[in-house]
Image (cartoon, rainbow, N blue to C red; front, side, top):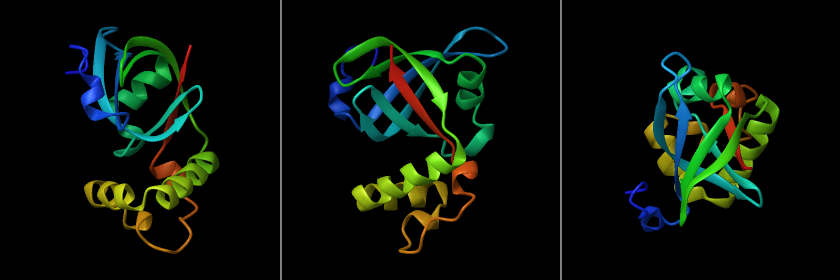
Length: 135
């Protein structure tokens, strides 16, 4: 749907990221939930942690392309955020979007996102965030 130009069906909640396989050097696609929208791009999470193939790929080659809303194949640069910034942004996300945070928590088994307690210190290492800046 994204490649057909119908990404706007998902509003701005989902983004499709084209990245390059670190071994194959072939184009790969992944659809991710947008946690935060920023002036220069979006922030997404690697819900399956540091072992996610797409995350490993963008670490090796940060140049990506995005399909988001009405945008199609727009060049961007991926930057994995440090654990402290990831924790801070996850805290911001769960305060701003408690309903979505509950859904994300149930999908990935992250009960911390639904608790009222402060997020654990290690959550930024377990759930890395990636900033995708338009270039």
